[in-house]
Structures are given as structure tokens and as C-alpha cells.
Amino acid sequence: MKLLLKSGRVVNPATNFNDMVDILIEDEKIVKIGADLQSDDAEVFDATGLIIAPGLIDMHVHLREPGQEAKEDIGSGTRAAAAGGITTVACMPNTSPVIDNSVLVQGIAQRAQQDGVVKVKVVGALSKGQEGKELAEIGDMLEAGAVAITDDGHYVDSAKLLMNGLDYIARYDLPIISHAEDNTLTEDGVMHEGAVSAMLGMKGRPAVAEDIAVSRDILLAEYTNARIHIAHISSKGAVELVRQAKKRGVKVTAEVTPHHLTLTDEEIKNFNVAAKVCPPLRSQDHVQAMIEGLKDGTIDAIVTDHSPHAFEEKDREFKFAPNGFTGMETSLGVILTNLYHTGIMTIDEIIEKMSVAPAKILKLDAGNIEIGKIADLTVIDTEKTWKVDSNKFYSRGKFTPYDGVELKGKAVATIVNGKIVMENGIIV
Ligand code: DOR
Ligand code: ZN
Image (cartoon, rainbow, N blue to C red; front, side):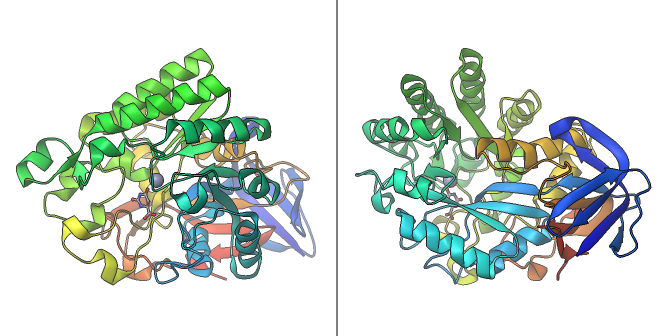
């Protein structure tokens, strides 16, 4: 099988390449890159006016398998990924049961081979049952193909447990992903602590809870000389802590979500459950710090923290609604609208954060368009305007604070292993 992508602009930050060239794909691989390529027997994809990027990689996704299929499953979640231009996702282990052993890691990988439209990498739990008491079988899970370890969804209260985990993972040169909010400070807070929470009379989660947690986790990574990756960073203090740690040479990386880059706690003013997320949407000064951190390299990657919930679970009083919302079908559009079309970031910088960096952090052979590489590609129309309609999502999660919002920029085709899996929003 051959596929010829004609006349697109290939943007490949991994090699600092940005030019109009054709790409010829044979079976799964890129076999030629160059001007005016011809082939008699290839299917031709006209990419005139479009950007061809290395496939987007979303390293923070809740696919909800096993056990929470009413929220999402591998089939629906990977379709949502493909619709959003994402070719690889890393799925989180806060499922039921928790993905805390090699059998489950292998099971998810196998299920993904059968039902997945895009590639699925598995992140294993740090502690058994994510209970924060006893280390899970970290080595076994990494040997079975897990790409990182995390108790995401929970902060690891015990410094000792995290330190043991870091000591263990150091020899694999893979990261522990930290969901960083000190529980004694967040307690049962439901939104960012600030002017809006005060006005609404709702219990807040102070930004300092994140600063303290990030600070401890950086110190432990420094002490053990292991890798820590800060998940969904959202406080300006945490960004500054990562910036300083990187200057000292600590092996720390960080990710930020589209929502923490573009929305504030003002979204909560009308008790909109779709905007309830953990860590919470914060005030504008924090949002500005996320953008600065992304620009200056303190924050490495953009991820969705795609957290679908069943409609009836999420559709309830703000206080009781679960945290999180669907993200993979809006992430690229939100980023292009708010960071590219505003001139804040170049397309090369955005692709670096959404493909190259996550590949590097998880040590995946991806995020690079070169001859001989597997053809995982995202075709992007930066000028396409469209309106978010959650009823049309492939994801089972229908809540998003972007519902009804006009966006500019969209993935128009997703190519996995040399095959078009999404074209013009339709999964093929
Ligand atoms: O908003 C969130 N939802 N934050 C998390 O850390 C967990 C996630 C989920 O699993 O729903
Ligand atoms: Zn999390």
C-alpha cells in the first residue's frame, strides 16, 4: 500500500525542517521526502495549503479501561484521539481495577491493538491500588512496556513512598509523573481559591498547595537523581520552581493543558460543572505564567488530561460533580486559536510541544518525520474555522467548557502506521 502526500508544508521541529515537500509512504513507513515526487500506484492525498506534522502525542489521557466503560473505552477514546489529530496517547492507571501490575499493562496494550484506532501506551500505577501505601510492581510493568509510572488523580502523600519509587525507576531512565497538590491544603475544595471562590462562597483549593507539592517532588527527584514529570502544571509558583530546578540540572519536565493555558476561574461563576477540573482553573496571573513557562521552555509539553465522565455522573450540583472533562477533540483547535493565531507561538513551537517533547519524555521512537520512520502524521488546516459541538464528539464524555466556542484550526487527517484513520472529522 502506498500513500503520496502532495504539496503540503512539512513542519518537523525535530530536525528544524519547515518546507513545502511531498512525502511518499509505503506500507507503514516514510520512504521518500522531496519536491515533486511521483508514483503510479500510490493513493494521492492533496495537502495543498495544509501542514503535515509528526503525529500528535497526548501523554495524559484517561481512557477509563478497565472498569469504567460508561465514561469511555479504548474504542471511543482512541476515536476521539484520531478526530483530534492525535496518533499516540498515554493512558492513566486510575481505573478499576487500578493498572498496577504487568498483566493489566499487557492486557490494555492487547485491547488497544484490537480496538484502538491510534496507538496506546500505558502508564502504570506507583502504588498498589493507588492507595499510596505500598509500591506497585514498577519493574514488572516497565518490562511489560509501561512508559511511565504515576498515581495520577492523587497526590502521593508519603514522601518516603515517592522516594522509593524514584530510586527504583531511576535505573530505567523513565519518569514518575506527579499529580501535585498537597491534600492537607486542598481538603474538599472544589475550585481555585481566590476572588471568585470568595464571591461564590465555595471552598477553594489554594495555588500554594500545588507549589508545596511540586517543591517536595522536585527535591526528591534531585536527591535520588531520578526523573520527575509534573502533570498538568497550573500555578505560577510551580512554574517558577520547575524553572529554577531545570537551571540546577534537576531531571524535571512539565506539561500543561489547553484549559490551564486559556481559561480562568471566571468560568465557574455560573456554577458550570463542565469547567470543574483538578487542578482547578485558576486566575489570569496564573494563566499568564503558564504561557510564559511554555514559551521559555520551562514547560515541555501540552497534554489534554482528557477526563471523560458519564453524563449522569457529571450533570449534578457543582459541589458533587466529578473533576475533569473531555479534551482530545478540542485541544489542537484551542491551542491554534489562542496561541498560534494570536502570534504567541509559531506552528513549529506548537508541534514541538504536542509531539516532539512528549516522544522525548516517554522515550518513544516518534515525533519525527524522516525517511525510514513509521508514518504517524497529522495533517492540519490552520485556517479552518469550526464550532465545538460536544454532541458530535467520538468521546463518550460530552462535557467541555469549550462547547459552542468558535475555533480556528483543526486536524483534517490523521495517519497511523501509514494509513489514514481520520479524514475531515470522520473515522475511516
Ligand atoms: O480533573 C481531573 N480528572 N483530574 C485528575 O487528576 C483526575 C481526572 C479523572 O480521572 O477524572
Ligand atoms: Zn491528574
